[in-house]
Amino acid sequence: MLNPLISRRRLMAAGSMASFSVLFSKLAYGAATGDAGPGASTATSVVPAFLGSSPQTLPPLPWADNALEPTISARTIGIHYGKHHRAYFDNLHKLLAGTPLEQASLEQIIMQSHDQPALADVFNNAAQAWNHNFYWNSLSPAPSAPSEKLQAAITRKFGSVDALAKALVATSASQFGSGWGWLVLDRGELAVVKTSNAETPFTRELVPLLTVDVWEHAYYLDYQNRRPDYLVATVSRHLNWAFASANLDRV
Ligand SMILES: [Fe+2]
Image 1 (cartoon, rainbow, N blue to C red):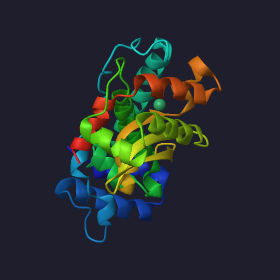
Image 2 (tube, rainbow, N blue to C red):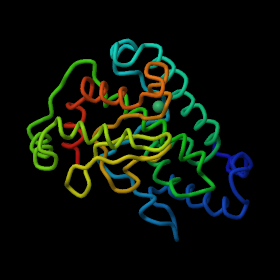
Image 3 (cartoon, helix red, strand yellow):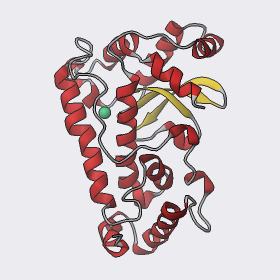
Image 4 (tube, rainbow, N blue to C red):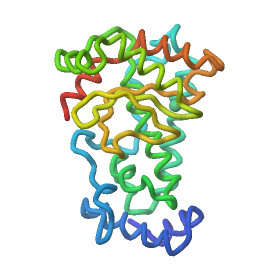
């Protein structure tokens, strides 16, 4: 049974009572109706159809923890998935227990909490949970090739897969501090972008197709400070072009 009073107490530390009460009312309304409620911004409430609906449950890795060796060690994958990724879900469960968003999808939570300073913890943990779901699927032990449709889009924008890979490595390597590198669809055109910390492209109406994690926990055990080496090895050997092609088909 929902208990908004408990949830208010739990989350009040994140913001003032007045501002949080307003936010909570909008979130509660949105969770029940799919709308953000009177006065709420539509842009923060609509989940794009292509994203689907991800439960607040840590999914299994799509491959064995040693499947990306020697590029990424089983030790790195084990800690990254078993400690970091799991912690984002655990934190989210604690933050949302007893609130109307307790059963909401990650996508709903992200769209309703981004750009809301009082809900920064909720956004950060939900977005990191989603980004990591997406990251594991962006990597593949075995080589794959882009679909015809994706290959045509790559040729049109970048000239070749190699040129796109170089752009993705360069952009991701240049992220200052923690964050992510992405191949996205931006108003019908492919683009390479970076986001900081937990930020995820779909809150900015960009369609994510592939991602690489550039938080230090993704590579430090294997590469220490050599982030570009991690990126070159991972992008050249393990990008899951079949996943990117399927994401493009859903748009
Ligand atoms: Fe990570």
